[in-house]
Structures are given as structure tokens and as C-alpha cells.
Figure 1 (cartoon, rainbow over the protein chains, first blue to last red):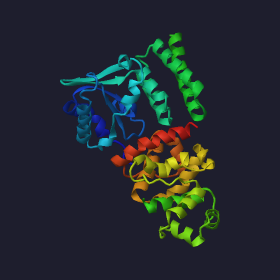
Figure 2: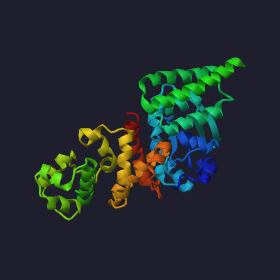
Figure 3: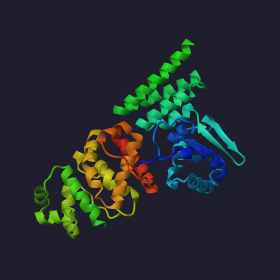
Length: 187
Length: 165
């Protein structure tokens, strides 16, 4: 099966500069590919516009994302902006964004560790678990103990509502985060 | 109404419920040859006959099949979640596995839009539940079109419900 080829990620920022204006957030499995972790297959690039003007330019930004898909030579359906719906549900999500890339007419953000986990935990499929493990590995050098404890709190509350495989996946993630906190305490 | 699509589902549902053509004919008060013709896409049954057959199998006839992409996925995936008798409505990841294995040979014969829906379900499993996918011994979709990507997102919503049930 043809997933998105690596050339898509290699040219993503360059082509974003040409096609996109304003502020954007890249999320999901594609973010890991952009950070150099090609650990799983995905056919989506979760890319959402940050509607700083209250949505006045939303349509124009959506059209820009189609242009980007065309430039990347992927189906326009590969660019998915539906994640905006979930992002907006998280209070003060803007505070959890990290600047990734800037250009003359725009900026690209990504979620921090806490926000990345929050977005993934609601569904927590096998791939979501893998994504969380990978982002944790990537962010650990920068992660702080309070941040990890925040994540732990979220996961513990979700664990109570989950069952079966999802319950097991949250359990493994809790263990991974707890391990890191314990290491920090030792140091 | 897409007859081929509905007839294809009748056979799938009958087999899924372990019914023979004779049993289905008896339960729906239709002749055995009529059931054979329906399943072979060679009949043009009245809505009344079709409703009786579908009623036995727990299939709700919908005339919006070609309108809403959800219905397309619905017929090949959502059906196992919400539009079928209680036995199938109790679907979990194990029964989904059986259902998928059973449908894999049939999928290639299916009408194009149903086939796309099938591929979208496979793609959702392949991307989001890879170890589960491996167990199925089914090949991932060879060609991923924009439409399959779009349908995959709908399929994923249902899939998560099944996997977390």
C-alpha cells in the first residue's frame, strides 16, 4: 500500500511557505514524520488553520490547504482540517502550541507534549499509543516534571472511563510517564 | 436503489447468520428460486418481497444509499454495528475479525462503491490498529484514492466504537 511518501514530509515546509498564509497547526501522525520519526503508516496530514480573525478567512485558508496538497502531489483529501474541531474543544489550547517554522507570510505550530497527548487520548487506538510513545521520546529532553504530571492526571482520569484494550493502552502509557517522573526525581 | 448492492448484502447477511437459502425462503415466505435469483442479481423483486427478505435478516432498506457516503460505509461496515439483528449488533473486535475474514473474498466481486467502502474500512484498521490488521491476513488496499481516505475517516469513527466496546 502506498502511504504518503517521505518526499511529502521533506518538502512540506518549503511548499507550505509557497501555499499557506497565516497561522497553522500540524498534528497527528504526520507531525511525527515531520519530526523525523517515520514509525508508522499514515495517509493523512492533520493541518488546521488557526482562525485568528474569528474565521473570516477560513474558506481562503481551506483553499490554500488544497493548493498545498496539490503541490505535494497527494489527494486533497489527505489534508485533514477536521482536527480543528477537537482542538477547539480544549480550553486555552493556544497556550499549548509550539512554534515550529516561520516564513514571510505565515507560521507553523505544533502541539506541545501535553496537548499532543490530550488530542490522542480520547481515541487512543494502537497507532495513537505508538504516537504518544514516540512524542514522549522526542520531547523528554525538554519535558518538565509538572508537564508530565499534568499528562499523568489526564490519563488517570481517562483510565477510569476506558475498558478492554484501550484500558490496557492507557495503563502502559501511564507506566511510561511515571517511569520518567521517577527518573527525574532520582536526578 | 442499487439492486446489486442490496442483493450482495442479502447473501452476506444470510451467511453471516448461518442461514441456508431454504431457511431464508421459509422464514420470509418467498420461494427458494426467488432467493437464488435475488442473490444472483437476476431478479427484480417487488419492494414487498424484498422487505420480507430483508426483514428476516434485520436489514433496513434505505433509499438513500447512493446519496450519503456514510450509507456506503454503512452497508459494508456500519451494518455490523447498527443496522442488524441483536446478535450482530453485539459486535466486538473478535466478531468483527470473523466478519472481515468472511467478506474478504466477496469484496473483489462487490460493486465499485461498496468495494471502496470495504477498502476504507481496511485502511482504517491498517493505519490505526496495525496488530489487529496483521491477524486478519488481508492485504491492505493497493490504491488509496482521495475518496477512500475520506471514507476511512467515517469508518474510523465506527471502528473506534467497536474496538472500545
